[in-house]
Length: 505
Image (cartoon, rainbow, N blue to C red; front, side):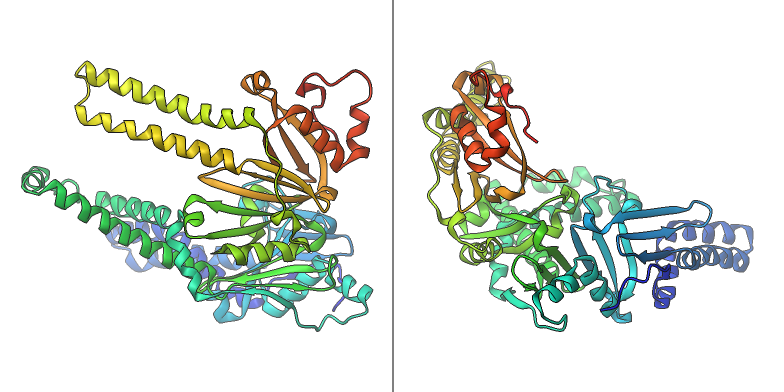
């Protein structure tokens, strides 16, 4: 492993083949406008040459003005000529390292290194992206940034070792794709693009709406509606499976280095490959997500709770895509180094919390049903609107499922919380990663003697939330998890409200 030189370095020269083409694609609308203007003025060759030269020159300039360096304490990226932009972060702020290679990068043997630092900025210019580096150099840099070389030396091993395989992609997992929201999102995007294209080409102006209405009047509703639903289901399923395969093909999760001092490596992708590395010291827990569709299919997905990782970088914390629940649970146990937090019985939150689940589900639903009934009675709505009455039993089922899911525990040094129905989450957070406890309660929660306990982690918005827990139980839970941190806030007058303990840091 080479030591950080501290000298400014350029990106790989092969990026001279990528950046100009990328700028040409970005300037494509402008180039089309130049083509039209040049043709109209009779200066076709001159205008076209100018239109191509500008983005190519910008691509070359981007390469010539981009530098990076790694010192013993910092990683820095400098780019720009007139508007100089310098990004710098301490090495101890590095949370994740992602290696992403588009098809073009893969052909050239390059990859993009994205260094996750927990920044709250959503501007791409504020992200530490080294685009691009040779694959081997990128992997060496990843090891440097995650201190794997130091961990190897401390463990008496050499950097050239095989990673321990935890789980590998199984093609049978694609059966879980239709039970996720990916297909609906892709279908909505495809419909949006199609509508925009038709509108741009003037298709709606030429559309014979009256003729379509006359043709549709002869259709049987009992035949057309099922056919439309089946067609929609087929399209959504195909898109979901395609998106799942493109994103997660060749997925593998491995661990490198000694336990507790190494890193988790995830690799996936069919066209664009992505390699993500998470430092062991930054991983404080796991989150097992089971949306309703995946629960029906007995599936789940699991992600890591990483201290300092921003929500915009949540994709970097993925540990396993939608897969069998048993596989997801095994992966979570590997990361936690124990299966007790996810298999232990949870503490029930009591009758007040259960009543709150039913109240929140049934009251809004009853208001909607009553409003529809009144409008139908006044002949302001057709009678078939009364079908909304089926929402009442659905709300009862939803409330019962949410009540059954509610629970928490403190097991093997981990705070465990479970909640939700449509999007159920089972989370386990190591108490060593908790830096603060928040107790907050709405007016309705205070009337019921309940509060929401939030365990926060360092340097980022990630947290574990225990919903609707009795106040005394919440305080006792926080105290049992971290007596030294919480006890100082319990001295003095008795605790009478959630506001007495706001945030312990």
